[in-house]
Amino acid sequence: MRTDFEVDIARRINAGVAAYTERVRSKRAGLLTLTQTAVLGQLYRHGAMTPGEIAERLRAKPQTLTRVLAALQERGRIARTPDPSDGRQSLITITVGGRAALGEEMRPRHLFAAELIASELTDAERDLLTIAAGLLERLAAAGDPPVRAEP
Image (tube, rainbow, N blue to C red; front, side, top):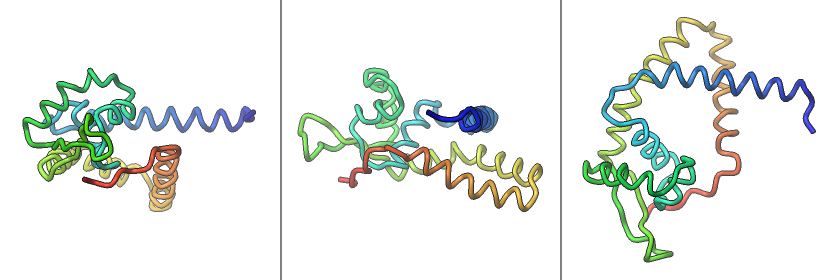
């Protein structure tokens, strides 16, 4: 059982991350839908996945992603290949064009965040935030299934 202090810290971190994410997420290029961005982001960070694995990571139903995956494939942002371990499945990978589109979509967010950090935080706070970013990345990856090798 966690102490009230530990639970309060977790609540403050969750609230702060959520509020920050909402603010930064509004800055976008508009080249991709939020769901397309999420799918490409998963593929960029974790490598090849089946549609079911993508859906699981996004906490969505595979049927929900059918149109999104079709649209991304039609635009050359993802590629499908047979899963070597299960021929009934396909593996989805992000293409060079998908990486470029994701980068363009995320650039306004990153620029906005960089400006916000530069204008609102001291050098010491920026250093601390860099450490916190690494810790948040580690917590976000805790318990993730291993990354699959690209086909």
